[in-house]
Each structure stands twice: as C-alpha cells, then as structure tokens.
Image 1 (cartoon, rainbow, N blue to C red):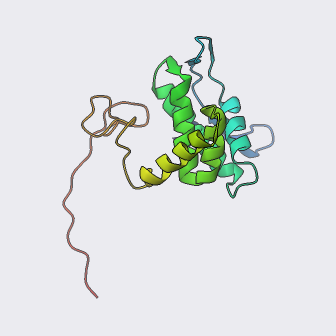
Image 2 (cartoon, one colour):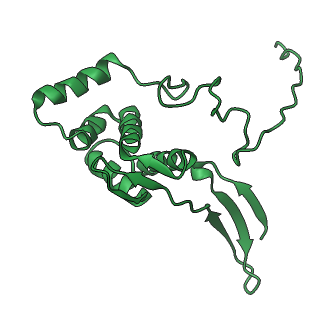
Length: 181
C-alpha cells in the first residue's frame, strides 16, 4: 500500500496500492459493510440495498437533465445517512431523503418519484405535491435543513466530529488581515 485516506462519498477509505510483481499502481475503495434493516409500510423487513435505491432514482430521473454521476452521489449520500441512522430505518425516511435530494437536482424528477413513492391516486394529490414544492422551498447547498437533519444544537449533531465519528480538536488561530493592493 502506497497511500491511504478517507474519501468523502459514503465515508469510504481510498487506498493507493502497487503490485509487487509488475509495479503497476491502482486504487481501491474500502467501505465498512453495515447491515441496515428497512421496515416497509406493510410491516415487512428487508435488508437495505443501495442498488435498489439507485434504480429508483434512475427511473424517476429518466429523460431528465440529471447525470448518472449526480444520481450516484445522491444515492451514496442517502446510503451514508441511512447507515449513520442505526441498524433499522423506516422506508418512509429513505423515500423522503430521496424525494428531497431529487428535488434539489430536478423538481420534475422529484415529482415523478413522488407519484410512485407516495402512490398518488389522482391529479388533486399530484397538485398538492407540486404546491408543497412551490410553497416550501428546499434548503440550498449552503443551507441547513430545519427538519429531519440534526442542527448544531442537536445532541446527535456530527459537527466537530471526524468522518469516523470521533471528536476532533480544532486549533483556533487568529489570522491577520489580507494585504490590500
């Protein structure tokens, strides 16, 4: 192994390796496998499958201006949030995360997702979803969500923790003003 570091998406460990036989270098990504159980609406329980999540996101964003890389990043971030949530998660929580994430990428894809996920029966229900997107704007990339995600004062907040969940010490140093031209 030549180098090892934490990579952002999904809290994976990125390792640069070198073949001892031929000297070629390659990269591996290692991720802790945690078995999360998803509780469905009807009470059934099944193992969380990130590929199933990605498939649902891809179907919702089919023929929309959303790249497969964006969908993979969204899927990884949802999977990481699910793993951080503990060994059990409600299917509705995963669906809400997917719907909110798609709404940030493309509201039309989010509406397509919601029509299946929320099992919309008629145009009135669809209109209510569209109205909710218009009336309740989602937080931007530089904003904190107020519901669902822990805020800075929440005891479960991860502010001040390393990617591995351990407290980090931050050295506070005062910097001088930037030189003016």
